[in-house]
Amino acid sequence: MAIDGLSAATIREIRSIERSHVGAGAVGRAVAGWRRAVHQPRARLLTSAAAGCPCCDDLDDRDVLDQTLLRLTGRTRRELAAVVDPLDEVFLSRTHHDPATPPEWPWWRRRI
Image 1 (spheres, rainbow, N blue to C red):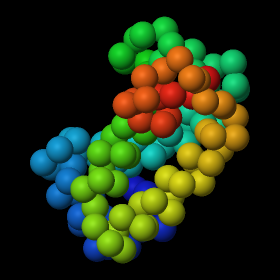
Image 2: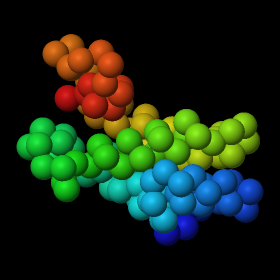
Image 3: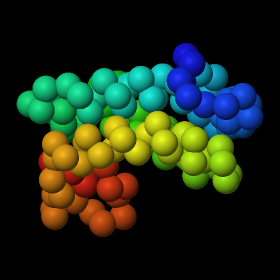
């Protein structure tokens, strides 16, 4: 799945990371999934993760994006972050911090 706005160099680096870490096409699917997740009705926003169903956890897409962002470098990281950051902002604006969650969890898994 293509990700609009990314340079050829960034796409090449993402494909390399996909081959070695997250699977072919995983980043494009994760961007699309995260976009869908953050814009869905608030009542549904966190219920899939809370239900404990690993096949339905919308936050898994953000996990894939984090794994990828951590492996990208310089400009390529900034390009993917420019796609992910606005989605994160939507998620942050629609949720709030859950103080009962373990502090070592990623920030998106500490939201309710």
